[in-house]
Image (cartoon, rainbow, N blue to C red; front, side, top):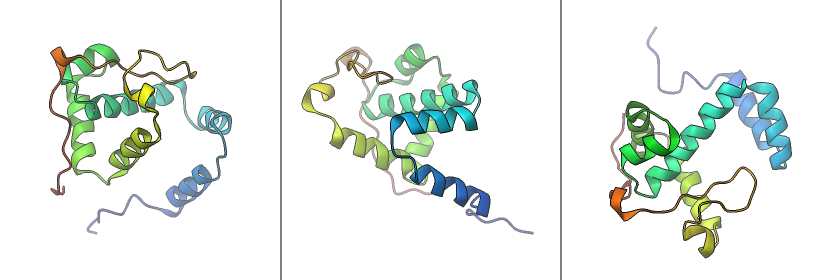
Length: 137
């Protein structure tokens, strides 16, 4: 049997998507994810999202690794999905930028919002921001 790119979208996965869309607050999301995932899984998901944000800010892989503890191999995989994936990382990265205030975008080390970290930009470790690619996998 030959698999297709959408084989992973089973009825159970679609049901998970639907219930995620029902979450109405950060507290609800935290409670649901804590029940659904182990602490390690939650930390891994949070680390991936942090890597996405730092890639989007143009930081060099070695600087992202230093800040997050993610290996450069993990950062490379995340960058690949950011550039050639389903578009979810890109969509939410752009949406989070659009929803940020100018003060938040300036890069204060801590935004003051619990669970939210803003990373200062450092020209010493910057690379060109990730460009959207039309390539597919």
